[in-house]
Length: 38
Image 1: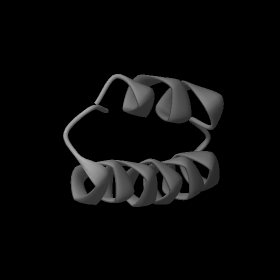
Image 2: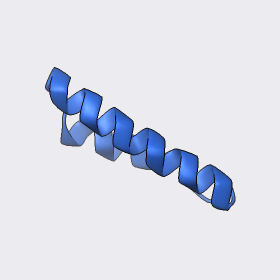
Image 3: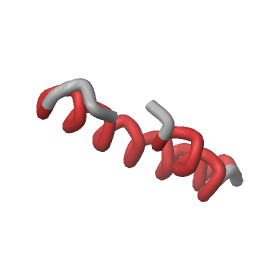
């Protein structure tokens, strides 16, 4: 999200984790899309 390489890495890891958890809970793509904002 434009906060430097380290922040970008955390964002991607967080987004992936949220996507997996969200998918398991039934949120799926919505979680992934909202995560992209951060």
